[in-house]
Image (cartoon, rainbow, N blue to C red; front, side, top):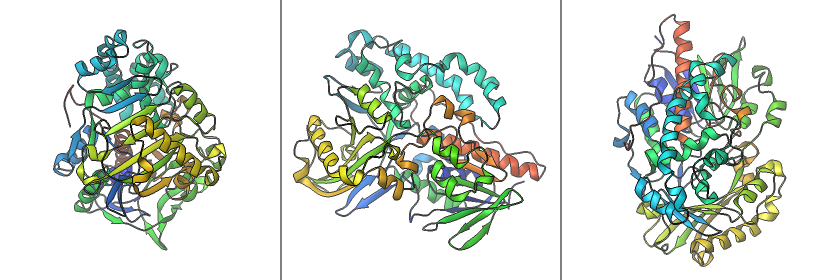
Length: 515
């Protein structure tokens, strides 16, 4: 039995909250320590002066089935704690070079939208969906397993999935088998930006990202994505988790080479196991001495390939939005490939793509009556590019506001009643993101699976979050939490010479099922 054993979880982001739930349900005493005064990490919702509400990071919820499984394993139903609104259209894609697609989970409507700009490609939608349904099913066991040894790269699950993964092809190249029009390929590949990567470099596995959206839906949590984090924290407290907010962890404590607790707020907290949830390349340097991370010394971290960053505008506006502006809108630059290449090579794009969330389209509680909360995200290079953001920030803000005119928003500046800008330096300084790389370590083949930081990081020490296996994105982080919790419980049980408890595996809802 593991009842009575103590684990400290550092960081109350999505992964830390999920691990805390999974451990507490098995009787582990859990202390969850968070430096901020609220849970959620970047998956939180803030209220600004004037009553405007904004998600700080993620603005939608994808594939809720995994989190629903975690809640169910704790004897609860996710829908009793969070109201999720399924969106249709998923988002409105506007191509600066001409054309638009209002992406729908309804296949007939999606085909009709595509047929407006590329009739020959519309006929390939069902084949794309069928092939990616098979790809996800083949890769599902891989997402469930840890990659602690090289042998895991030739596990039965990996060998079975490999023929469908086309590991040496990129997302864009893979999609060329279905769609000839580059705009249509972008509609099924811009999602690689969720990983901070280019569809022209990202491994072809990640065509499943857009498939997940079309097959299983894109959701808006009423009240913002922070409502999900708050629901997880509420359940964790009911399960006995001791959540300590506003407390910074200074370091992980070791005894005889094994993690044995943490030092936080001037207090030494002993533990049988420690789980670290945070931006890996930043937090691991701060908390764990090099001698306890031989595979990830500082020199390797300095050379690690990182995702892009983002330039953010959180705008509280007087008045409403034009009816044509939906919940999610994406402007794709006329020369999208050049835009992406500039970001990848450290050049600040002067004709950038951008994403706009108008949450009030679905959720009236995100702004006061007669006002609008607008979230604007622009992918930009991370801080390794050496851009002087203090100097360029005002001009880039002006450029972004001008770009919003292409989405039918010509009068934004005169209506601003609240404004906050977050640039890559803010991601680094305020949110503890290494080099401002918003989406963690890059997800190229050399930093995936075995080559990504392991969930079992060392004796008594475990990781969870977008910087570790399986990777970034809320559903993937929740699956990573299941892997981490399972490994930790197995280790504790082995020490007690008892069988490890079983955790529910990654599961895919039947076609068309909303979770």
